[in-house]
Image (cartoon, rainbow, N blue to C red; front, side):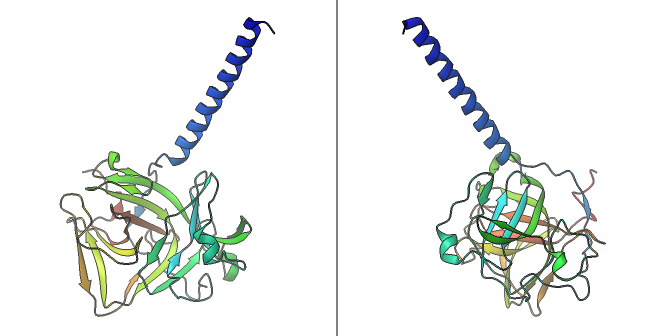
Length: 268
């Protein structure tokens, strides 16, 4: 083979490899890019329908959340249905893109009722309220759809699960979920403006109120409660939205009090 022809072949192969690498990089970058929030909702609690079923058939907190996200659809699934992935399989399992395993989180609430998957009509009844899909050989309940993501005080401090000191990430999600805290203590995050969040999960299983480096004006404290704290989604009517905040220690919080009648607040 002539040297010139060999160089042409090598150049063509290299060009194909480079194009493929660029396409893969672009695909992955698009998957992990933050999703801008394009919806707004009223900060009025949404009532759980009378007689609604709870996914799993009870209101017990599962202790450890086994979840994955489909990065192409922004849907989050939790282990549920007739063939749940066992804990020992979960601990050593790796999903392939566009599926990504959520970070392991130890849950702090006492009562949990998923009363509807986000893609199901509000007038559903019984098992028809839940979307169950088989993925990687196990059954999963469609739990949440991400409506938008942001980072405070600016976008530079967050990258998926990683939140830099001095920042918090804020995910707005569609999730029809009632959560109950029996106490006697909760871990309450405040932005100093009237918005309150309650810690629902940690990576370690032990809440840390002194370790997080929060944005200026934000505080985290342990607070005693004399009666159960019941969280319901917001939006009013048939809508189910929550804001979920994460700090730099991967501690996660559900917003349960709003300073404004609309989220995001109307520009002044």
